[in-house]
Length: 633
Image (tube, rainbow, N blue to C red):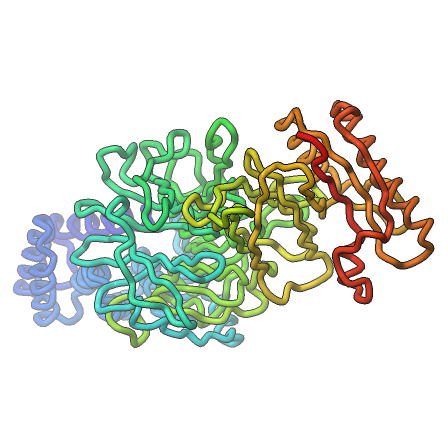
C-alpha cells in the first residue's frame, strides 16, 4: 500500500527528530551512540549495518523504546516478521502510548502472520487515539474486518487437496501463471530462469503433462520479460504482458500473438485506448474473444491497481471501462480470470475481507449484467500470504495455481485442486471440430459461427486453422446453440447443440465435410424450428435463415429447392401437407427478404425420405428436418 509506505517514512522522520532533540527513552550514552549511528547508516540506505547497531543499542539498554521500534521497522522492511512483531510488542510493553503508529504496523504484520486475535486487539487500540487520518482509520477498520472474517473462515474450512502436476512442467526453476486450452490438451505457463521470464508449453498425453518446451522465439525474448498470459479457448490466440519493450507505450503493455501452424506469429501491442503510458497487464480474454479483462493503475480507477475491460468492435477495442466498486476497492485487485462461461470472474484482492495480503475471490454476473459482491474462496485455499494467478479448466471442476509453500520440484511449482462446488462456474462443455473438403479430404480454413439462438447473437466467431482445419469453442449449459460453418465456393454446414435442461455428458467432437457447390448437393438446416404439428417459424430460426439468405446473395446464380420432411408418426397425407407448409414458410421468408422467387422452389416430402431409423426418438428427430438442394448453378 502506498500510504503505508508513506507512514513508514514519516515514522523514521519522527525517530530522527527525537535524535536531533536529544529526547530519548534511554539515558545510556553507549546505547544512544549506537542508535545515532544506526540513523546515519539508514540515511545511506545501509539497512543491514543499521540493524547491527540497533541490536547493540538494545544490548546496552533493553528498555530503549526508540531502538525497538526502529529495529521492528527495519525487520518489517526485510520481511522478518517474527523479529518485527517481537520488537513492536516490546515497545508497547515498555510504553503503551509512545507512538500510535506502532499499533497499526503491528496489527498489519500480525494479520499477515495469521495472528488475528492479537491483531484485532492492537488495531482497536490504534483507533482509540485522537487525530489519526481518515485514510489510516479506514485501513485499520479494513484490517479488523479481515480479522473477523479470518477467525470464522478458519472455523469453516473448505476442501483443498493440491496436486503437483508433475515434472513434465515443474522444475528447479520457478513455474507459474498456468493457462490451459478448453480441451485441456495444452498448458502454457511462465518459467523464470536467471531472472528472465519466458513462456513454455506442455501437451497432455494419456492424462499426463509431457516435458515442457520453449513456446516460440517469435514471442519470447532474451532481454525482456513475458508473462501474465491468457490463451483463447481454441489455443489460436495468446494475450500476454510485455514490459519495457522498445515498442511499448508504458512500463508494461498487453500484446497479442496468433498461432500459425505449429508456431506463433510476431506479437502486436494493442493500440490505445487500451495500452497507454500507464501500467497495463494481466489480460484475460472471454470465450467469445470479444471482451478483454486486464489490470491497470491508469487514472480514473478506484485504487492502486484495478480491473478494467474493453470490448472488440469492428473499429477495434473500445475505451476501457472500470469494473467499478462491485469488483474494485481503494486497494489492489489483480490477476483476473474470466471463465469460459463468460459469467464468472476470479481475481485476487487485498481490499475485500480476507485472511491477509491478497486472497482469491469469485464474482458472478446477475441477470441484469451486473457483477455481484465477490465471495472469498475460503480457507485454506486462501491463507495469510499472497494468493494469485488462479485459472480454471473449462469444465470448472479443477483449478490451476502456483505455490512455493508446498513440497515441489523447487521454487514456485504449478498445482491443481478440485474447486469446491460453491465456487464453481456454470457448467461448460466444448465443441471441437475439423473442417475438410468433402472430395479431397484436405483441411480447409472456414468461417466458424456459433450462435445463441434465443438471443440471435454470436457467442463465437473465428476461422478454422488454415493448416489443420481445426477449431474449438466452448458452450455454456442451459442454452440452445446453432453452429454454421461456411467457405466461399462451398455449401455451408449447419448443426444444433441444445443444452437446455440438460448437463452435457461429454464434449462434442465433429468432423465437417464441406461440399463444393454442385447441382444435387443438399444441406440440412438443423436450426430451422417449428412447434409440434405446426408450420409457423419459431424466432430461434432467424439466425439460420439469415445464413441461408447470405448464401443466396453470395451465389447469385444458384437456384435451390427448399424441402420439408417428417418422421413416420401420424397420418401419411397430413405429414405430407405439414412438410409442404413448412417448406413454403421458409420460401415465403426468403422472398420477403428480397431473394427472387425465380431462384426458389419448395416441396414437401412427408415421411418418404428418411435419413435415420424411425424406430428411435433420436432417428425420428433427425428425420423431422428442413433441407435445401442445389437445382441449378
